[in-house]
Length: 314
Length: 314
Image 1 (cartoon, one colour):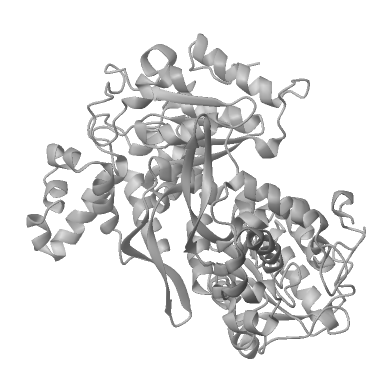
Image 2: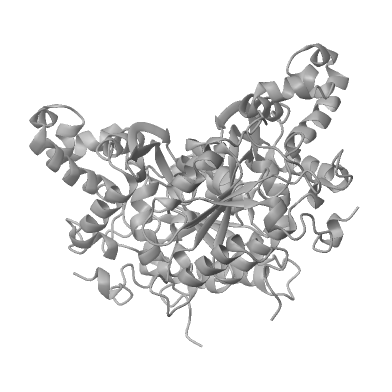
């Protein structure tokens, strides 16, 4: 039989994953869990696809802002929009993740959900990563696609729990990861039911409803899933609460943390990346029982290419 | 083959359901929809189980209040708690649904999610409906259990979208309806991540987060599901926005409205029930293309008994 995790290198991390999945899914195991309990949660930015030098949705917002600034040139002079339009990385990084995403979300306000989906889908079909020279949807990590497929094959139900915008992720998560919209949890803005004649839609508003980061990830798991996951995968301090919440349940649990230490194939960063620092989670991983995944050491390849669907190919 | 809707009487309503399901699920149909689009949403109180003379969760809150009042007798003199404790139906009805549920939710504050689940589960295992003389979990409507099973067998994914508390419904929805926690949407209170030693849990707070009624049902469908349903089933004006939102999508859609017109077998009520009136939705059903289901005319039986799981039997 082919190795379902072919792009995970043999070693303690791959063994930990395989052992955990056997422990909770083999009927003869003392720790067997029924499929209904096999809930896995994955962060998206930096865990399933790249987040350097900016999260993908920020690039999308930059392009939205160009369209908006053509109608309202005053945006070119107003921060933080000026920094978006000038691709001023230092100012954007200094904003921090929440303020950056709030500004990005504000470029989506006033659109109905379906219209937003159409615009985001069209953008993702052609927008390319500036450094990796490929479509953003081809910046997903091949070993993670294998892990998602492996977990699904073993009866896991997988949710994304990410700081990214919930509607943005839903545009590509099903095609790219096989994760349907109702299993995507993210940051959200308030919406309003918009009725015009026979048309009834949800209109996106400017006001933030939930910024899905740190402890809020745990609250949103409670709201959307209502069950404690048994497996969690993240890559920053913003995921630490979710990893610890997962580990704190009874029985076997697996919490994984991706360390971007691979400047050659992707990027190398952790505590100094202001948009999504990795410091406490890395320093205290042992204490919390979190398994650190080294991109350099544990992944055979980073980007697949072969697994990219034809519809998403350049 | 046995009739999957044996307790739905032959007639235009049953035909409308069977025709709709064939239209969207048979591969030879021009209106075929892939399983991922077969999203169905059901209200709970008054649609899947009874809501007279009070919603079931209000009975639960009454019993919680008795426990709380034993420690804090001042609750006996404070409204609306006094009305709960004295089973003062007029005062409780006059509160209206939102204020009534907010008061009920306040009796759950300060509990962690798992503790709340244990208490609610224990209560549901023995609490009986005062008029129907059976466990509350036996007050579910047999024809609806058949409809849920039929839709599931035809590839639908079913969500509850109800004004009831999301954590309360999750305690029984999987055993009673076959609907897992992550497919239950309801009213929610804010939560806080509570850490004590190695224990990490979600603590329920007193503050309302979302009261899942009327337009908010549509907003919560957008937040939790992210796709427009193709079938919706409700029983009150609180469901009208959800029914209309469902109908407003392209292609075939089915919106159903249960009319409680059966004083002999359940209850007969509509516009005068202050906790959940049915007036506009009934008056304008034709205009909105909503199919009205008469409990008296369209259901062979109301309560099953045979389909109640042994674990839930008295």
